[in-house]
Length: 85
Image (cartoon, rainbow, N blue to C red; front, side, top):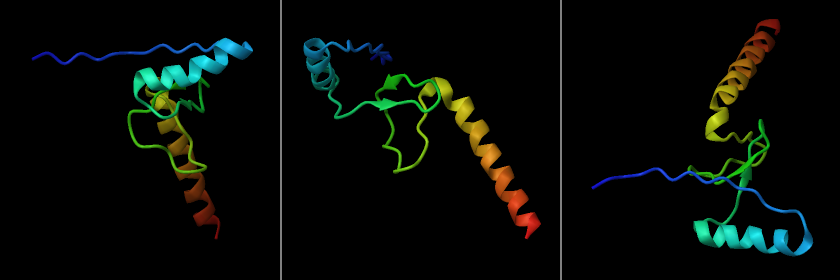
């Protein structure tokens, strides 16, 4: 048995009819209920893991290094704040 990874590339037109029909059709074909936009590259993608919490940054697989860098920066800022108190 072979397991293959399928990659999707998404491009949605902005004209009123095609764009309006493309989004729900895409979600139906993929079996998903929504798309997410990466906070770094702004490209829409289908999230394979659970949805982010409200206010939480959201990154696609290509931008995980950026996510790790931002988390490290937030951690260091919290340490600086604690040391000042």
